Image (cartoon, rainbow, N blue to C red; front, side, top):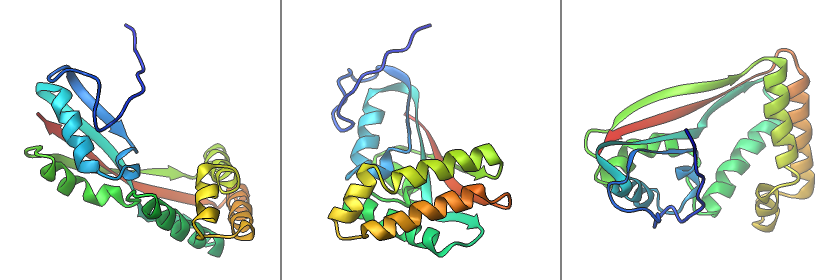
Length: 182
């Protein structure tokens, strides 16, 4: 079987009505200005009896150890930057409401969690955020939006590396999953 990747506008998909059996998004609704409109568009291209599915994080439901104050700053910063950009970092808790507002009847909602506890997992997650804190659109938005200084971002990056190197390190994120039949 083959897959085709198409870049497009999530509010105006270039597909006919009733085209797909499954329309899925992962960690996207948290970044858009109008997640309800995006879900409506996903439902439009799903066939009758098809499924609309989404999975979104709830950043307020993250937890970690050891408790590093720079990671508290990181979480606050993630939430402020997301919202300043028109997104909702705690999207998971909104999925039921958004689905109903989009006209999706009887949405099924579940939750799961990611846990980063092994050395490779900590290295990947902590390393990714250590870099992202300094060299990404997130970093640019944090500084240009007046949410953080370069020194604060460096402290966050350093804290992620400290966390990743600690064999006691633990980090978890809660996700909410939506499954709705069209």
